[in-house]
Image (cartoon, rainbow over all chains, first blue to last red; front, side):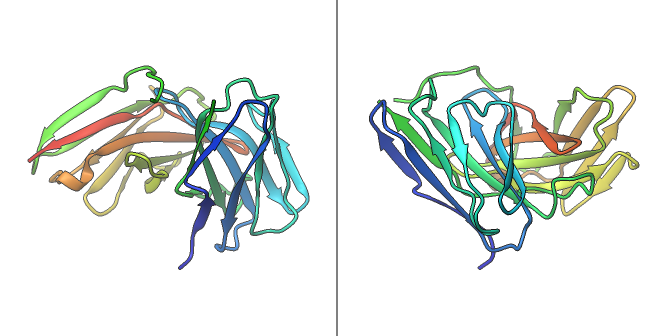
Length: 115
Length: 110
């Protein structure tokens, strides 16, 4: 089964704790992305990575960190510095993030609740 | 419980009718567009895409129209079925990044 997996589906944390969301893909895609989705808003880009060991900040990177040690994996850490971390987090991948313009495939999402 | 945000635009159609969902995009330099379908609690699912050198593209039961003059994109779903009930949103690609609309909630009435 090819695709993108995210785990866990639901995650609960206390305020002040860091938490890491997992994203794995077996599509052999070069580019991977993390988005945040809030009610009534479009997806907002947190971070993206075009190749292993390289990543760039998106529009709302503050309070988040990522790593890209393997092509298949792009974990997202929500740090205690993120002021409003409760949201639905979506990971995506594509063949390229450049002007080649290929569709992004999304994972099932992780709903994070911080109290 | 979940926080309440802005209400999405909604569209209700009878089963078997055609649906038209609209999207206004912002950047005249965008050259690639995608329509996604998202069911509650799930990740977005690719429906159809179109490049800026085209003004129409058809898939199975779906058609996307692109009007670059007024920066408008539409998704037409033929013979709408109950399984089509979901939120639909468009995405525009500018450079390395996609920008996503807020979406339209489609409800199909049996």
